Image (tube, rainbow, N blue to C red; front, side):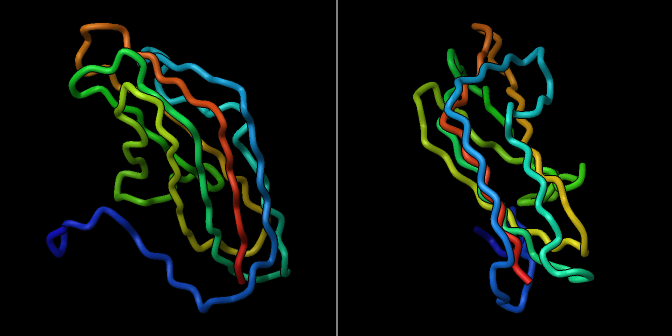
Amino acid sequence: IAQGNERSSVAIANGGAVESMRTITDDAREYIQAADGLRQVANMSVVVPDAVANSADLLVITYSATAIDFLAGTGDWMKLVVTVDGTAVPPTDTGYFQFCSSSTWNSLSHQFAVKVPAGSHTVKVYWQVFDEGAADPLIGLMESKTLSVQRHN
């Protein structure tokens, strides 16, 4: 990647210990179509309590799932957005990234890091599919989902 074209962000921390960790899983298969727009992934929401009062911390968020863009054609893709307290968490300047663009099942994972102020925080995962090809109705499928959040001081 040419310098200046990186599609990531960096949250710098001092290597503090893990204060708490929350993990949720859901094996149910979920479907989405382009007409559905941006929608929260079912059961992928977790509240991370304040571990040390009045302490700004780093959240390390990992989301993984098995996904497919069923009937995917050229240009069809699935985006993923992770939010903390309603604000999109980067890996990119747009707050979302391409999670899947394949018409075969894939096991996918992505990790995010964001500094947060003291207090409890709610982490949610959203998804959307884009049917650019329009030859067939694109259907996104996701299952075996895991959301894990570590809070570091």
